[in-house]
Image (cartoon, rainbow, N blue to C red; front, side, top):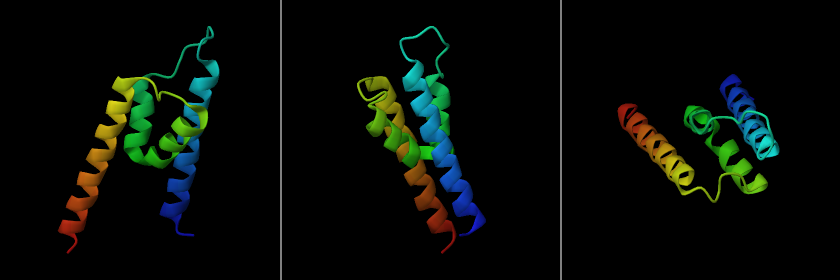
Length: 89
């Protein structure tokens, strides 16, 4: 497996774990993971892990502003992929 694929797989696993951790401590006394951090992890390449964790843990699925943030992250990533593909032609 190429190094970039290993890194991406590991990064998505970490992203899913952070989402799971945030869900586990929700409602308790511990300080939560900021939404900006959760969205930042997704933006930096952890979108598959974030979406999996949102579905698996039912985390942040009811909060409309967070869902809208995820849509913006995915849209930005799609624009970046299309632009990169156009540049490498």
